[in-house]
Structure formats: C-alpha cells, structure tokens
Length: 363
Image (cartoon, rainbow, N blue to C red; front, side, top):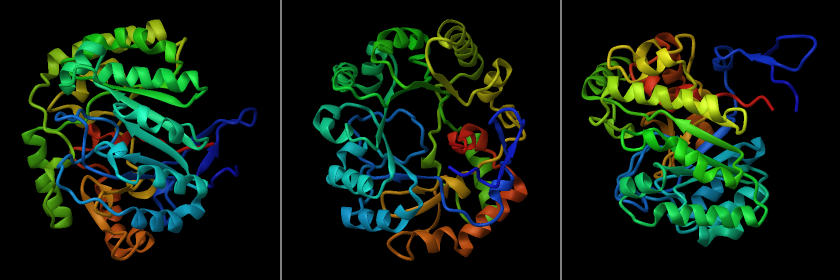
C-alpha cells in the first residue's frame, strides 16, 4: 500500500509514521470506513452502549436491500472497510444478501453484534472478508441481568466457540464499562480468553448529562441553527463520577498489569488514570487529550437506517436516496459543518464520544 501524503516518517531506520491529523482534514477525501446502521431493532429491551452513537427507536424506517446494494456499488471503487451495525444488524431481513454484495465488491466488512443470533449466520460470517465484533455487557451474570435475558451470554459464547472450532480467527470481544459490570471485567477475560480473540476492547461508556445536553443545544443553535438530537448519545444518571471512576481506574490498572502482555487488549479511549477521573467528571472531561481532533466528518461517515449521511451526532449532510452519497459527502452542508468544526475544534460532548478517539488506518 502506498504511504498516504499525510503521514510523516518519524525515523529513517523504521517504518513508524506520525499521523498529521489536522492535515487529514484539509480538502476532499474518500472515507476510509463507512458505518452502515441497518436497523434500529434490537434483541433486548435494554441497549447498552457500544462503539457507535446510536438511536434505538424501534419504529425507524429500514432501507430496502436494493438501496444498500446501489450504495455499495457506488462506493465500492474505494475498497473501504464497511461496518454493519444497528440496533442489531443480524435482524435486518436481507442481511446475508448485503454481506454477499460487500464481498463481491472487495469491501472489508466488520459486523458489530450482541451475538445472540450468531448461530443462524455461521456460514456467512465464515466468509474471508468478514470480521466480527461481539459486544458484552459483563461476565455471565451481569451480562444476562443488564440485558434481561437469562441465556444471552451463554448463547453468544457458544456461537463464538463454534466459530473458533471451524477455524475462524477474526473475533474481537467488546466490553463497555458500566456501574453494574465494572467489577466483572477480569472475570470476563478469564472466561473468554480460550476463544483466542484477535483483540479485546474495553470501552469507557459514551454518555451525556442534562447539563451537557444544554451546552450542546446552545452550541448547535449558534453554529448550525439546528437543534441537537439528544437521542444519539445516552443521558446517564446512574454513573456517579467519583465512585465509578475510581473503580474503573483500578480495573484498568489490574488488566494492564496482569494481561496486557498475553493479549491484544485495547482501551478506548486509552487514557491515563488522571484522565479516567476527568472523563467521568461533569466539569473536567473537556480537558482530555487537548490536541486530539475528530476525523469522523472526513473519514468515517455513518449511514443511518433511513439513508441519512451522518457526519456527527445526528447531523445529516444529505441522504443516499435523495442526492446520493458523493453529492452529500462533498456538498455545501458537509463543507459548512467541517469548516465550523475546524474553527471550534471540539463541541462540548466530543470527549465523551467514541468518534473522537478513532484512528486512521496506516496499513
């Protein structure tokens, strides 16, 4: 792969490169990754927070597979990574047809799922171009309790065991720290390490608050003359910053000390103990990683289940059924959003959103 123009060589003696994040935001570029939200339907009444900011209203429209296939045909020349999410993407009626279409267009595909229906899709998931991320809300007891289904953990683990037995080696396990599961993270590692995952991702939850929502409303009213849709990131009242952050910091330290040399363990955001405390603080989360900038409006668009091209939390630059992806991506509304974001650098909620911490892929 050719080295992109926005990578600067750090040393003549190695192949490490420093990414010019701000340089990546100059001019038009084809996205590296597309996140396709196929449906808002879920397997469970409780939706725990995963890698994407999602709306979980079950009555949202779904695009027919013909629209998705036209979209894939339109963007396939970029050979991007395509992430299939929801809701629960395996509940989309034509999921397997869509997966086949992605393979035919040489798109690397990642499925983000709760794992409950994996047994029904084994053959499709074993396809060479498909990666799998399975999200957990805890070890067995806490996972089942949070999701409200007694066998949800066991079903996911059983299916993953079947995939491993079949020789599948592209499993990522994703675990979001929550007040009801933070004490179970180490037990989760012990329970699942036999699956030999490619990596385990431990994520600090994406969450807002009434105060933060008010700040976002004021900011978006000023910058875009548009209201901020609070549904796109959960408003958490159960997270008590001081107590919870201490527990999370202790667990992160234990995992790093005991398991980091044995597994590919990733924390997102990967921040220091002092920044973990800031992350959960109502007043200080704005201070985390001050030089970090968001690349989502330039590199990682989300296509919502109704076809909206989302550059940020609910900010639709257009629709793939109306003007098509490329006209929306390169249109005036997108340019205006990007220019204003570059001016303000961050919105109040950015440090609590996983998009800020996404990295470019350099290989």
